[in-house]
Structure formats: C-alpha cells, structure tokens
Length: 121
Image (tube, rainbow, N blue to C red; front, side, top):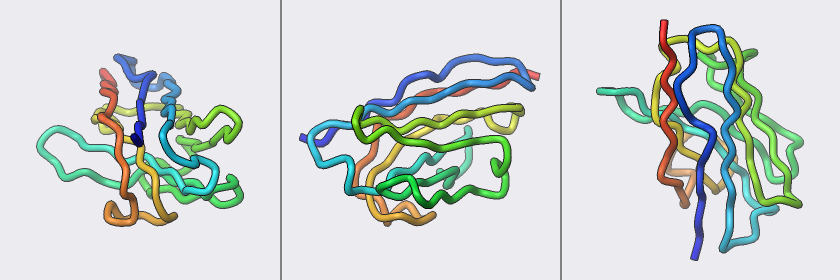
C-alpha cells in the first residue's frame, strides 16, 4: 500500500536549520509531484512547497520562499525539505503528500502522518 513516512522534525532555535525527509513506498514515486504542507496549532493546514516529478519545477508559499528548498531523489524514493533561517511562525506539523503539482490539498491524494517542527524564540 502507499506509504509516506516523514522524518527529521524536532526542536530548533530561531535562525537554525532542519532538513525534513519523506520516504515513499507502494507506488511509482518518480511519476508524481510531491509537496510539503504544514499545520500550525489552531490553524488550517497550508501549502509550503512542491516539486514536479523530475524536479524541474518547484513551487513555494510566499512565507517560506528563499528560506526553504524542496528537492527529491527518485532513485531513493525520497523528497526533502531543507528549512533555513527558521522562525517561530514555522512551528507546525509538516506533512508530505503525493499527487499532481499544485498548491491545493485536493491535488494530492496520498499523505504522510506528519512530523513536528518546533522553533523556539
């Protein structure tokens, strides 16, 4: 069955960095766009970043542009999110998703369980 397993979350001070990973299995990873969404406490889940099937196109939310970088390794069935210059507002559960490239949740049909990122001030 389809599985997306996120890892790499944790507690970091403001200004620090983290790299999230999402390992995929149970489907042909290399033909799907991948994305990262996040949900802060008390807020709706929101789009963070997405990458096309071959890495040729990336999309970013304004809030993370120039601080976060999404990448993928199709040989390892893994998508990454490098997060730099983290801010307390980046505190959220981060989810990876597989589907069609875009910024809307309903464009992605498979989701991971999420990994917590906490940024202290």
